[in-house]
Image: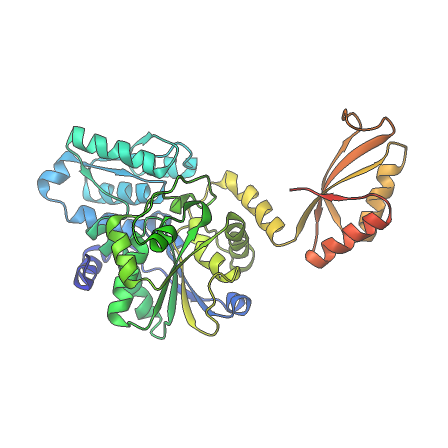
Length: 402
């Protein structure tokens, strides 16, 4: 088990080498969710996530002999950058195993910090097994991303900062992958103020902590692809599970659609870029998986390292989730002016056409018919229903896409 005193010591160790990130009140998010929302912006931390805290504390604890041999880590991205940056600061050679689907921006950032990067496996757990094997073969010190006392103590400094910045804190909502961040935060807050509610949020496809709590023991899931790659962990740690069982009040999971909607809110309303894992805590509040009406709530934004190629996909998913993007398919007569009349009707309905595809050659179509697929910019669900009803009345028989 990790002690509060170890977290205090970690704060002294890493002080000056990390940034004191802001804890920013959001009136908009408070009105949207009903909670009094304060964002702990670890996406503004060095390396773009909280992971530098635990990595730096762990590497600082190594003996001179361990430092000379080097370290190895496995990570979906943020821990990799944290270890690489900490190793660079301390003059330690670092090797990092990353899953093959890791966003290239995280791979390149890890290499830029001086680490040797090896891509291995389909998910974090696959990379971890290879890293553990290489550690034994090469005599390297394994830097576990979450199931290590020194790493957990480093992550716990987030909790110390939050309570200092927000003395009236009543609840905290934290993204959960392997459980290192929430474990450190929970130990800290429950020591200083036991009445604070600590709530963890996972993604549906990798809700190992949620299932483990239900089962009363650590459960390993098969896992599947998610936009929240930073918390896509098949199995929580043994140590972190024990800590969560003791200190964490509740664990919930959210969908990829919930997370995409939260990411869009961050971009449009708060003007910050947040990765999928970092948006999980807000997603739980917006989707009402967590209800904290009137409670002073710290929402941990754990990271902001997102592949720019994914941003367009995330925006599109978020727009669909919030009823601002409507995809439809209609059939119409293949005669001159038919497509123009459809476009005119959509214009009268104030539906902006973003994309249109006109297919006259599909084998299943009668010779006098054509299929049109349209993506529309819409205001809300009510606007979408109005469009569909008007098209139906006009004889187009629209079908939603997706």
